[in-house]
Image 1: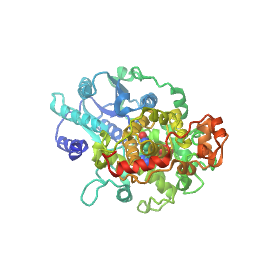
Image 2 (image 1 turned 60 degrees about the vertical axis):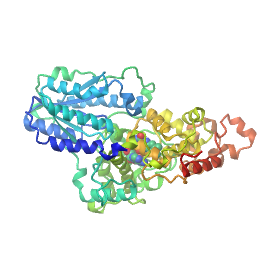
Image 3 (image 1 turned 30 degrees about the vertical axis):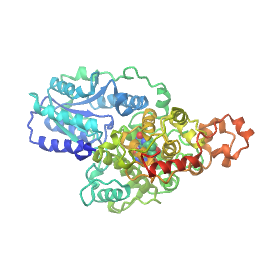
Image 4 (image 1 turned 120 degrees about the vertical axis):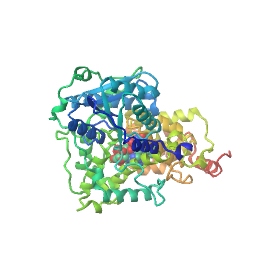
Amino acid sequence: ARVDEDPPLNQLVAALEENKTLKVGPGKAVVYWMRMEDMRTSDNKALALASGTAQTQGLPLIVLFALTSQEYKIHGRSVRRIDFVLRNLAMLKSEFAALHIPLYIHTHSGRRRDLPEKLLKLLESWNVTQLFANMEYEVDELRRDLTVLEKGRDRTHKVKPTFVHDRCVVEPGMVANKQGKAYSVYTPWSKAWLGIIQSRPDLFDPYPDPDPNDPSIKEHELYGTLFDSPVPTSLEGFICEDAAHMNTIWPAGTKAAMSFLVRFLQTKARSSQCSMDTLPPAVEKAKPKPKAQTRETRLGAYANQRDRADLDSSSRLSPYLSAGVISARECIRHAIAFQGKRDVRYVDLKRDDGAGMWMSEVGWRDFYNHVMAAYPRVSMGRPFQEKYADVRWEVDPALFEAWKQGKTGVPIVDAAMRMLNERGWMHNRLRMITAMYLTKDLMLDWRLGEQYFMSQLIDGDLASNNGGWQWSASTGVDPQPYFRVFNPYTQSEKADPSGDLIRRFVPELKGLSGKAIHDPFSHLDKAAFKKLKYPEPIVDHKLARERVMRRYKNPGDD
Ligand code: FAD
C-alpha cells in the first residue's frame, strides 16, 4: 500500500513542474518518443507538441520507438498484441515517411532498467535536447520516465522531456471528490467526469497533425540512417503463430480503425448475426460522417443490444483503442455528434440512449486508468479491497486447464473461452461471465484469469483487464458484491438468446436449441447427452455458490 501514498504519477507530475526552469539549447532536432499506446499520426498530443516545436524552431522531427526484446514479458502481454504493435509500426513507418519524418526503432536487448540511459545516449548522439512523449500510467513506465527526466537533467548533455496526458479523455487527477481525493466508485466518478466534458469541450478537441509541407524537416544529415531503420517482424524467439488470421480479423492501421468506427456509427444493426463473423466495410475516406441519432444504426441500438454477445453489437474498437491507433477523444467526439445536442453542456450518459451508453463505456476505460494512477497497488497484484486479500482460493490445475480450453461443460463459458483462444477478443458480457465463473464457481484466484486473458487478448490492457477482473472477483473498486454471483446458465440465456454464439464456437452442440443449448446436461436425457461428446459440468453451480459465500464472508477461514 506504500506505493498508493505517493503514486508514481504524482511524483512525475511534481518533477515535471520542478523541471520547468531547466534551460536547454535547441539541439539539432526534436524527438517524439512514441509509445505502445499512442500509435497514430493524427490527434496525438505529444506528436502535435513535438512537431509544433520543431516547426517553430526550424528543426527536423524524429520519431523514436523503443522496443525491448522482452516486450512480451511486460504486463504479460500476448504475442498477438506485440504482433499488432509491429504491424502498426510498419504502417506508421510509411505514414511518417510521407510526412518526411523518420521513424527510428530502437531495439533494446539489455535490462529494462537500462533503457533510460541508452535512450539518453542516443539523443546525445543526435544532439537532441527536447523530447516529447505521452504518459503511460503503469507503475514501471512512470518510474522509467522519472528516471529519464532526472538523468536528462543531471548529465552534461541535458535533455528536457515533456511528458503529457493523452491516453484518456479526461486526465487522471482531474476527476476528484470534494475532499480532492480520487473516486473508487464509478457512478459518482462518471457524474464528475461528464461535468468536465460538458464544461471543457477543449479537452476533446483534436490535436493538429504534423504539417507535410513544413520545410524544416526535409533535409537532415541523419536522414539516411534513420529512415533505413528496419521494423522487426517478430521479437526474439517469439512468433505469433496465428499472425495471418489476426491480420485478417484485426487489420492494422488508422484506416482499419476508422472502418470499425464507421461500421458502428453508420451501418444498420442486425437482429441475427453471430458476433465477429463479419469484417467492417473497406473505408476509402478515412473520416466517418457524423450523423443524427437513429436507433437503426449499431450505435443507436447499443442501448438495447450491448449485452447481446450473439450479435455484432459493440464497436470492436478495443484493439485500436488499446494501441492508440484511434484516440478515445475521437470516439467521444462522434458519440457527442451522434447525440445531436445543440450544445456540449446538454450531452448526457443516459442508459436508454445508445450514444450516451457508449460514451459511458469509453468512460470506464478512463475510470480504470484513473484508478490505476491513484491506487497503483491494484496493478501490482493486490486487491483494491484489502479485506479480501486472504480469501482462500482453490489450487486445481485441472479445473484451470478446463476453463482455459473451454471444456467446463458450461456452454456459454466454453464458447467464450474458445472465442478468446481463436480470436484474441471477447465481448464484454462474455468477459464478465467467464471471469465470474473462474473466480466464483471454480474459486480460482482472479490473478490466474487476469494473466491468462492478457496472454491471449489482442486488446490486452493492464488497467481495463485488472479492473474487469477485480470487478468480477468482487475485490476491486466498485465491485460486484460478493453475494451477487452470476448464474452462468441464466446469463447465457440473456447474452446468447439465439444460441448462435454457442453453436458457432462449440460445434459439439451445433444440433441443439432452446434451453438445451444453454444447459445440455440438465435438459437432455443421459443417452442423448453422452452422444454429444461434450463434458459434464465440472462443478455444481449451487454448491459452488454456497462455497463462495462462506469464503468471502470470513476471508482466511476454510
Ligand atoms: P464497446 O462496447 O464498443 O466499447 C467501446 C470502448 O470502450 C472499448 O473498446 C473499450 O476501450 C472501452 N470499454 C468498454 N467497456 C469497458 C469496460 N468494462 N472497461 C474498460 N473499458 C471499456 N478492455 C480492454 O480494452 N482490454 C482488456 O484487457 C480488457 N479486459 C477485460 C477483462 C474483464 C474481466 C472484463 C470484464 C472487461 C475487460 N475489458 C477490457 C473491457 C471490455 O470488455 C472491452 O473493452 C470490450 O469488450 C471491448 O469491446 P468493444 O471495443 O466492442 O467495446
